[in-house]
Structures are given as C-alpha cells and as structure tokens.
Image (cartoon, rainbow, N blue to C red; front, top):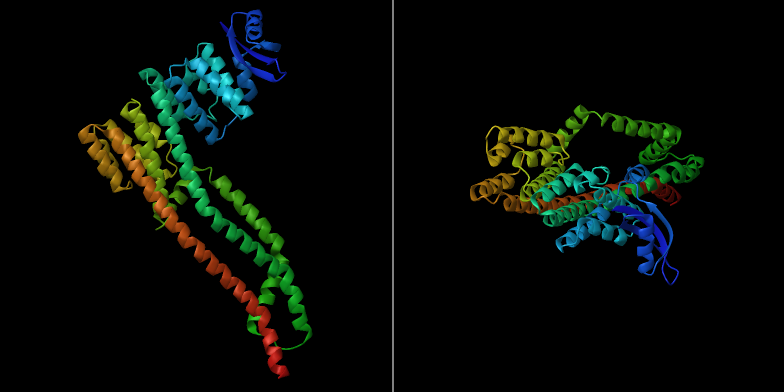
Length: 401
C-alpha cells in the first residue's frame, strides 16, 4: 500500500484534499468516486519532497499542544496511528500544520517510527518531545505519554503567558513615558523656552538645566541612537558566547527578586520535565540528561549536570540535587520522599506544581512592585519638566505685581 495525496470536489462543488492509502493511483481514484468525490488531482505522497518543501517549518507551541492532545485522544480510542495522524492533519486550521502532519503520516505509512518521522522537523518537535514519543512507543503507552506531553506543553505555555501579561504593562508604560519625555525635550521645550529667552530675564536654575539638557539631546540624539543600536548588536553577538551568558546568568540569579523568580521558573521546568520522563518509563540517567537541557540559566544547568554525574556514581537523586546548593529545598525534600516511597514521578509533579505556584506569586509581587515604581519615577520626571517650564511664568507674575 502507498500513500496518495488527492484533490477533489464533492457533490456540492466544495473542494476536498487529503491523503489515502491505495495500491495504485487508479484504485485511489475509484475509492474517491465510491465516497462521492470527484478527483481532480492524484499524486504519490513523496516523503522526501515533503521534507524538502517544509522541513524548515516551526509551528507555534499552541498548535503543537492542540495537535498532541488530539493525537493522544485518537490513539487512546484505539484508532491506528496512521489514521490518527491523518485525522489530526484534516482537523488542523493552520495550513502549515495540515501539511506537516500529513507529511508525518506519509513517513509513518512508509514504515518509519513516529519518533523517527518527527525527527525530520526538529524545529517543531524538540529532542524532549521525540524522546517521550519514543519511550511511549517502546512501552506501549503512547497515548498516555502523548496526553502527559500535551499537559506539559499547555502548562509551559500558560506560565509563559502569565509572565508576558505581568510584564507587558510595565513595558508599555516605560516605552510610552520615554517617547513622551523625548518629544518634550526635543520639540516642545525649545519652543516654550524661546519665549523666556526673549524676555531677557534671569531664568531659574531648573529651567536653565532643562534648556541645557534639551540642547544636548537635540545635538547628540543621532549619536545616542547609533550607540543604542551598537550596544544591542554587541550584546547579541556576545550572548552567543557561553562564557558571557554564564556570567550574566550568574549575576541575574544573585539579584534578590529577579534571581529567585528565574530560579523558581527554571526549577519548575526541570522538575516537570523529569516527572514526565520518569513517569513514561525513561531510565533515570537518561531522564536527568534530557531534563537538564530544558533549563535556561547556565549555572542551574551546570548544577543539573553535576547532579546527574553524582547519580551515575550511585548517589541518590535527592542528595545529588541537595549538594549543588542551588535547587530549592522543596524540590530536594519531595524528591527524597519520592525515592523513599517509590513514587518519584508523583513527587516530582507535586514539586513542579509547588514551584510554579511560587514563581507565579513572585511574579505577581514583582509586577505589583514594578508598576507603581515606574509610575512614580515617570511622574517625577514629568513634574520636573513642568516645574522647569512654569517657574519662569511664576517669576514674571511676581515681577508684574
């Protein structure tokens, strides 16, 4: 049996397209006509052509999570894997997702394993995703692993959305305030102050300082812009070096508020990844190595690597994590309980949930502290500008009296 990609119209003239299995193109055409479809194009679904056409595609996490949930439901209901992949492709609203999952189905029909087929699109399906799929296929629990993987992706997406929503307001306030201050300094202040200069009166020191600042920024504005662009490009290039990233990650983790927030988020990601890997039957050492790769901060990733090396030498997971002195106590205590009771995966899930709640609390507190601080700072700057403009008017009124 081979896979054929078809385009057809139904009895109402609506276009249809998809994949079907048949021995020959003629048999595929007969099957379509038996289903009430009138084929307009039938061609063999070439796996290599599919990879070449959209092997570079990177689907959004939301699309991958939804497709994973659908695939878990269909496989769990007893549907064969190739049919389940075809159904996911047909249900996809995103045209890229439709083509990608149709191509994955073609690979599977051709005899490739699901994990091997997903490996053709590494930008969409990460190493962790493929490792879990391979473990589920080996243990015969593919639908359970896919369901847990969908939970994992949805949880990570929800945490990322909460983080983005918490920081979007301060970012908007900062950008708008900087833009308003720049317009005041470059355009408004010079026009208002020129009136005071024509009066030939002695201006207050605050007004003179504002005039000097306005002249400075108007004269050097282009240089500031070039310097900002150069600094951004320099940081981007330096960030490609592991030594630079490790240095500023270490400084970030030492900050009292942001450091604890990053530690909580990274540790929660590490614990939830390790939980899903251990729960799917992945060997512990392999699970530790895979969970280490999802950690963002390099000091924490190096600590996870050192812990994995200790476990390989026979040390317990809880003791190996505790000796690094960077992981929160809630993680090490719950891991110790899980190892003692033989329930390591559930304890890791509980630790991940606790750490995610802690990260959300810290994020909420950080945003609640940052927002009024920004408003007060920007208000103070605007107050200084208003005072600098209004003080000469007050002085002129006093002279008239």
